[in-house]
Length: 221
Image: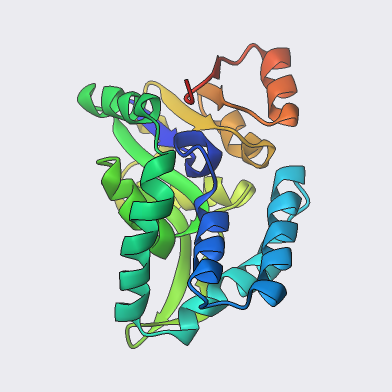
């Protein structure tokens, strides 16, 4: 059995679910456009540049989850999935995931975006395992804080290692391991697997992939 890991945003999705969730809440009037949109864009540009302070960002990103009841968040997420996410899932991405699942690999989506936003997206791909940044809960409600290690940069290796341990596995159990990603932020985990694959990569990752002979894949047609 092989281990196959997928980044989500701008890899399996032709867009960023984190950013789109913020924009969706703005469009619904849940968040103030003037106050929130510029900050959302600023964080997104920092992420793309590899300069994002994950703790500052998560304080910003998770706070809206703590300000609304779960049933309301779930209702908004259902609309968000239909209007913002399904249109940016490409047939090529669905087929690649299916190919690995059909081959009997242990497949997981590994993302910095929090699990509230991403768990339904993983289900849409038919992927049982999600390794994501976990929002903290108290009595079933989101607190606005993070639980455990943020699943970002080197933290992705930590989170995957912990997930494998919960399944009573380790990295050495797999003859081959794959990670598909678009982002320079994922260079640590890309360097950990035996088969790193750059997917519609940003310029830094594209240069790194070419220099190291990594495959470069286009999932957007």
